[in-house]
Length: 277
Image 1 (cartoon, rainbow, N blue to C red):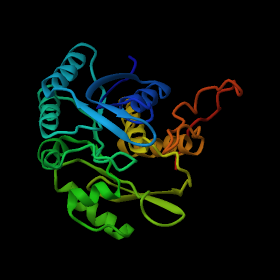
Image 2 (image 1 turned 90 degrees about the vertical axis):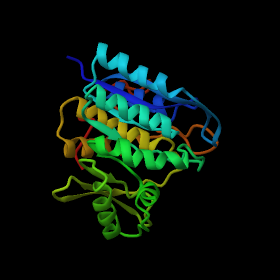
Image 3 (image 1 turned 120 degrees about the horizontal axis):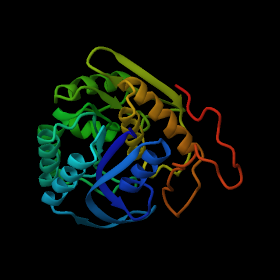
């Protein structure tokens, strides 16, 4: 059966993040993608100019109808925006017994615009993170969730331990906001720390990186990969998407989600589109 993945997130009219980035990632990785849209944003590479929230009961129904009909092998959350939507998503995950949940605790857009109301953070911690197979915060998000200052890999480890106290099964704390030429992402599954190290790609084309990474991990989980391998493969996919970004727009440009596919000028598929880091 074709692997099936569901994204619960906001719509990005610029196509670089949110639902649009997730569906591109699912498709290119060979997974059937489904959506539950939480918000419609008026957005491009420069900023977020408006947000229209979808009623939480409609978000719940979107999840319910696709799960009961098509089925869900793995799912992810992105922009949830409000406390009521967080609670509706958590209710659906529990009632429908959905597994392989990746929670990307989206709080701000790359432009700095807020995507999660302050009162929704507590709901995220109380209701949704305890249901997660994996959460994928960046450093500012982890600081908001833990109240810690994170300035080193040792701080990242301490933050992972604190985040695990919220009930999730594993944490991938992304180190891209740390100073230096190299990036260290810290993965912790409650047993041991794993460190995923790679060169930092210097570029302004980073719109949707968090969405894309969490979607890639979700796709690999839907295909049956073990969690750590899905994480490493997701990071590998993301790095190539960043390094081959097409430089669109006037602000933080989108990634090249399609890089494993043949292009118009290079019609050959790569022999080995992914490598483990």
